[in-house]
Structures are given as structure tokens and as C-alpha cells.
Length: 403
Image: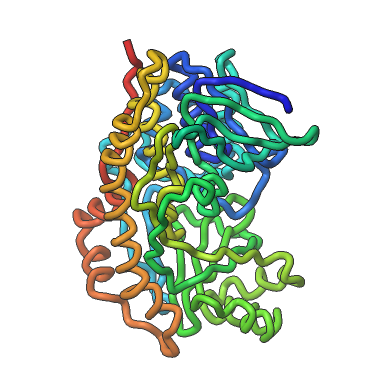
């Protein structure tokens, strides 16, 4: 069997995995990142790049390169309830370089990171390569077994990082205990043509037929229709015509756009999970991002929390890997640093599911705007609070180049 040796192997070429690999390589650590797909071209992923992430790219000196990629800027967040627009967040006063949220296809975001990382000879990105299982010796994880077009091979490493998402194979193999926090919704994602040229547009609409998220992707809307968990087959059985009518009832101006939906192949199901590991690590092994704490798509915060995990992990673990002193205390420090913002964000999402999203998708009459929404719309100074909560979040990480 083929054998590779490195200081760190990262499973998963998503935001958390690539950022970890890039920042470790930037410090001089030998790192291999495994990505099971041949490219990053997968739609309906987290496309929201928040102000905290843009600030990090600025600190790393690669923001200008990132912003050459196609993107749209959200400077103000609106939501439409029963046909009336309400302003709920203003990102214009955030204490960051970029006072907006960038809507960018995740493949462009990841390609930008991969280009930056490949400038370091100690970084390797192996695509079409899947992490299959962990290698354990005397209770310590010492690497992974992986597979590519030529079959199985072994990668020995001082540290193995599981950044392979909410369905992490390595997390399952590690035996670490997962706590399911429950999610009452699932989501259908789809593309609808966009012709609007309004400067400020609603991010979502709530009506008597439910709730529809609308994300401006230039010449199309990336739309999400949340519904009661487990009801996907029931909705499909009702037929595409009924599905199009549901969209039209929530957002009448999208009635014509919805006609492009002629097959269920155009409608992708996201099974929503909200869970977390009680302990993120074992000796020689660490989980970060969705592998450690799967988030609801609510607020689009998952990608940004995953990147914050990666920054903390690289900052704490890089010096230890370089001096061959990595042990469990360093892994515990990563969890201690990042577990609080992850847990608080999940609690906020659970409350929003219960008191906002579920009532919105189950309403049968034109809903009345909640008091908080009316308050935010009336007093502009208050709109900085949700902007900071979403755009920057809790305990944002920063990068200062090591000595």
C-alpha cells in the first residue's frame, strides 16, 4: 500500500478544511488536504461570506483577490411580511473593512483559497481523494486511510483534522459522542430567474402560504423554501404545479419565474441538522466546522463559524506542529476557544426555529409583523444590533502573522 507522511492531514476541502490547510502551510507546516470531489462546483452551498470573514481575508492580504470573483453585496437586510417591506439590519456601520455581506458562489470562494494555499510548497490539495478511516496506534490517531482512482493508500500524520462536514466519516470512526439538538425543518433549494434591478431587495418573504428565502445571485434568485421536517415526500406527491403555486402565493412577483421548475431534479433537498460533539478531539485528532457543530442554514452563519474554527485551530496548533510538541492540551484549547460561540449560535437558531420560522411556515392567514421586526424597521439605530450579530458574530477570530 502507498504511504505518505506529513505533519497534518485535513479531511475535507470545504471552507474549514482549506482555511486550516492554508494557514498551517503559511506558518511552514507540511499539510495535505483531502477533497473527495474533483472540483468545487457544487450548488446550494453556503454562499454568504460575512463581514468577519472578509475582515480575515483583509488581514491575510488576499481580500482584493477574493473580491475579483463574482459576488453581490448586501449592505442592508429587508424582509417582506404580508406584502410590506421591513428593514431589519444595517451593515453600513460595522467596524470592519467591508461593511456588507458578500454573496459569492462557494466554488469561487474555495478556488480563491486553493490558489493562495498552493503558493506554499508545503501545501498539497489531493482532489478526487476520500478519507476512508482513521489509523489508530495505542489509543492515538496517527493518520488516515484514503482512496483515489488508484485505490487505497495511507497517510501518516502528527495531527488529523476532520473538516468533512455534518456527515463526517472520520467523526463517526472516532467514536466521539454526538448530541442531536433537533431541527424541526428541512429546506428545498432552487434557482429562479431574476430580473429586478432594485438597489435594495428583500432577503425573504412571509405570507399566508409560508416563507421563502430569496438570495440575489445576479441573474437568478437562489431560493429556499423551508417546511416541516419529514414533509418532503408529501410535497413532492402534491406535484410541481402545487409547488409552483405555493411559491406564487408567498411571492406573487415570482409566479412567472416559478414556471421554469419543470422537474423535481431542479429542486434540491437539504435535510437540516443541528448537532454538536460533546468533545471535539481525541489524541491526534480534531473535528472543526460542521463536523463539530452542524448548523441550521438560518442566518447563513455556518460557513463563517467553520472559518473561525479553522483560524483558531491554525493559530493554536501551528507552533506546536512546527516544534513537534502537539498534544491533547492544544486540541482542548481549540475547543475551549470555539465551543462558546458555536453553542450560543445554535441556541439562538433553535429559538428562532421555534418562535419565528415554524410559525411562519405553518401560518394559514396573512401574518402580522412581530413587534421586534416593527421596532427594527422604525428605529434605524437598532438595526446595527442584528447586523453585528450576523455580520461579525460572537468571538470573531483574527490573524496576526507569527514571528
